[in-house]
Length: 410
Image: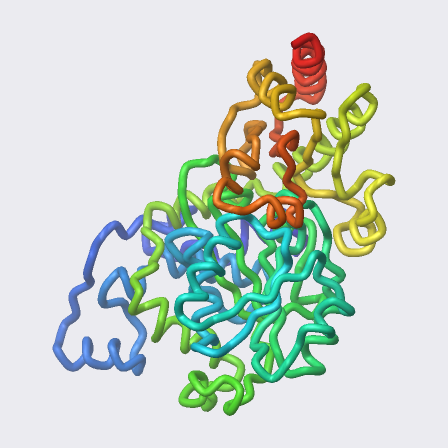
């Protein structure tokens, strides 16, 4: 099946009434015919569900669908994208371990690494994740390389093949946050990634109605029992070791589960992911080209020929640049004026909505980062992040053009 067909016909509902979507099992617990049966369910010796924090049929259907879409062997859904990032890392890390990460990460993820430092886990940041920059920092304490495929909002694109080769040569996994790329643009496992994360609140859902995240395991990485002792008891499960430990360990015990209703809303949204992303990427490129033609604005978008990441956008992303672009307006005052003068774009912190959203990152999502960290992430006082929606492009260009005229007058 091709992409859009797979979205509609993978992991279809098979309940006895023939529903076209899995039902919403909005319950806390599931009863069983005997104590012996429930015991087997808890021991993972029988199929079934016991408690929604541990597993739920609606959430299970969503996990299977996203795992199939990404070409993974298993997925674990979480209560948010940040929960997914946290669980994916803590599943393999312990005090004394180090992670190499891109400096251009989403501000919340950078803040998370600051929190993990209190538990003895160190993040070593590189300006850009490349084979060379990663090689220079790998040591005996390194346990993972973590990066966003398309940085938010830096918009740097990672050469996954070369970075994965370095990671695997040193026996460490490559963990990719592919939220801004989505499975429509690329399947990271085909380029050597080992674990993929999505904040499914964004493009997967598409409607801005549910907070959620998901972790997908490729099943390809071979976990060394000495380097990753927490996985030792799960090694008997072979390629399922990472996912099994995650589901039966930190994810289960922290309680970072996804609600059945939000899982359902994600499945509804996923069905139009291909159609939405096709429109969003087309709009983003045309808006970036238009804004780049305006005097006084500097535009960053990976699919523009002027971007240093244009070759990777061609080779990895099929020539698409995703749905985010950034604009530098020359000053914070002009940035605010442009934002405030827009009629159609909403001033909001999310991305991946069907509506165009704008935000001033320096004063919001990077509020807790110092100036150096902001600049490493491509965030300046005059930077505006635009998450492009599916509106008619002529309306968007007219709106941004008029707003920029007003901003220059102030």
